[in-house]
Image 1: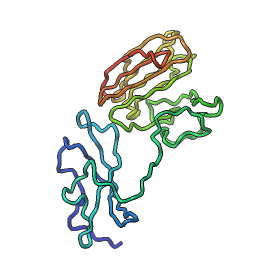
Image 2: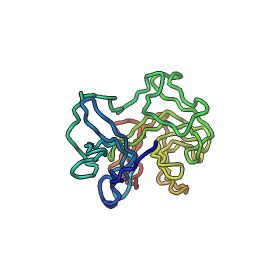
Image 3: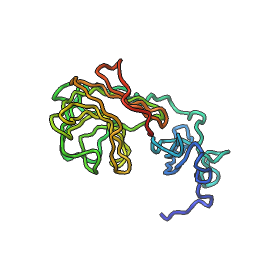
Image 4: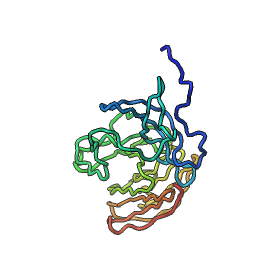
Amino acid sequence: GPYVGNPANPILTHRHLGVDYPIVNVGHGDLIQTPSNQWWLVVLASRPYGGYYRNLGRETFLTPVRWEGEWPVVSPGTGKVEFSYPVPDLPESNGLPLLTCDHFDEPVLDLRWDCLRTPREQWWSLTDRPGYLRLFLRPETISKRENPSFIGRRQQHQSFLAQTVLEFVPEKEHEEAGLVCFQNDQNHYRLVRTKHDSCQVIKLFKCEGGSESTLAEVGVTAPRIYLQVIGRGQDYHFYYGEHSNDLQLLHGPVDG
């Protein structure tokens, strides 16, 4: 400092456009200047869909900036974040390829995989069985604010398909492994293999507001099972099967 506030503040906001506007929660901007002397603002914002729901969280948007006197004017002419602008005068960059399938054939996890909170021990392995991701059973659960054996990827699209193949035979009640659609420890879906009354089963659990219920259950015998979730907007469908080309609908649609 000292700092001087822009007399035109806020220089960018969507708060006056209503909850039905397609881009909301705009903020946290950073000014950048390109080598060709163009100015842009990198901001975070959300795209609601299926109502005022923002499953994708806050995404990165670019808006052009023009300087008038000593102050920046963001998105000249409209003052809003638009879905498209003329491409900046920069060399083309392909960036990182979109990770669509991971065969876990590298010695370390791809940086696009996340876990919940900071691991205090290594509960996964890519080397015990090369070409497979091994997660170790531990007492920590997805339904508590702990660091469970969970590897996840952030949802990037309003419609998606996520699938995994699971080799797991639980030996005790409450042991489970599978696929999770996770908002937080109080709100999520779990499509898992577990043990119930001495039988191997696939279960779909719904946790809403911390209250858990079973939406569907089916017995299985094969040690290797495919699990899949398909999201079409706010409708999610859950599938299972022994072969990837012959999956059965377990339950759906449910509210994403």
